Length: 262
Image (cartoon, rainbow, N blue to C red; front, side, top):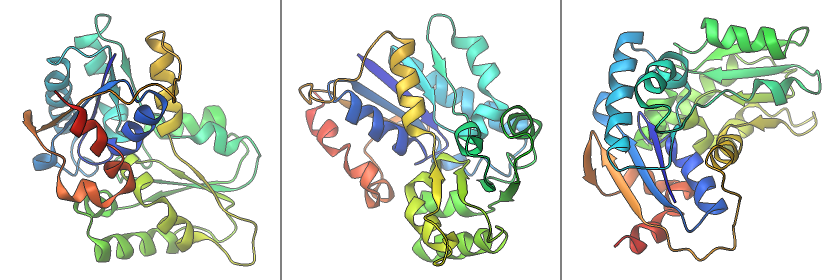
């Protein structure tokens, strides 16, 4: 079994780590384009161009499924990727976890890139799944780029700015960019009111990984022999995991895959 993931950069690590945990015997292909990121503030045309390039590079390795592990790419380029690669290659998009966040009916915020925030796509999800719920959309300029670089100071500045724009009464935060899942606990610490119940964070990695296995008729087998291999594609060329990727536990969890690669 081979599963490919694509993103602008390190945002794919969260879903890749979950796929690896569920199926340690699966080969993974990680395709990103760090030279062209961030995608969040870019035009739709630019995102489609970059996302298609990442998808094509991944598809050339003949995976059984491709995860578009990027909210911005899923908003703007998923239709184009599916039009080119399906039905031969199942393509699974990443949807912000608005539905589970709205299930309890309590106020929550959606942290996302500037291009996703306020987009018809995100507004449609709010309308469909969170009608009548107090929802605050919070754009997070610079956060994905800071996470990509593992720039601790820039991450802190961006998180503090987004936290300041987040109402104190929210009881949950939807992590509407896959990069944000890598710094989830920093986000929790910045938004959590010490006098309030624990803040819920809603990411997409687990749901996307589970959906991918369903699409290819596979089931979770976390006790399988960890025999999978890893192929890393940076801007279409084979490479190693970048040092910034290894500053996150999700990236380090893939090192055994790298060692197992033939």
